[in-house]
Image 1 (cartoon, helix red, strand yellow):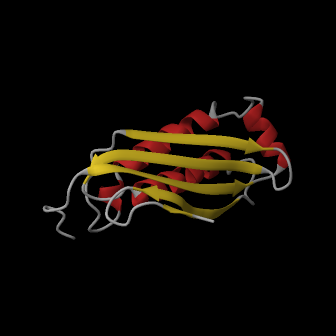
Image 2 (cartoon, one colour):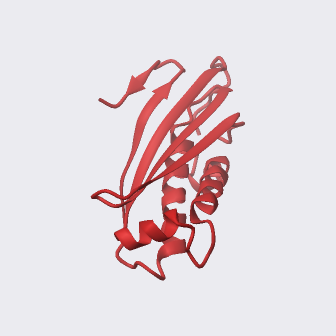
Length: 145
């Protein structure tokens, strides 16, 4: 594990995304609130937040961080490609970045959507998991172009 003892605590932020592609009927079921398991988006949002908070338990040598904010936005897309766009923003004031927390949260939110919808759509695909932006720390601001 990297020693961050002597690093200054600074404001840090990371944004990540994922997309889960699914049948139009599955998206419609989610949007209309007709899924037999209930509010799929709410459950996926909570799962993403929980995942960000437990990232250090899942990824070896990842620091346990005191996150101050985790936002999980889930946007159903009814146009081609149909599915749900996941975007996560994690923030903290600390000595190390929050990229892994944002990426983990985006993945777990997408996996939760898959788990909840697999009975009605086995062909779903999770794709495009990537870091969009990071701010703070010694390396400064980075944004995907």
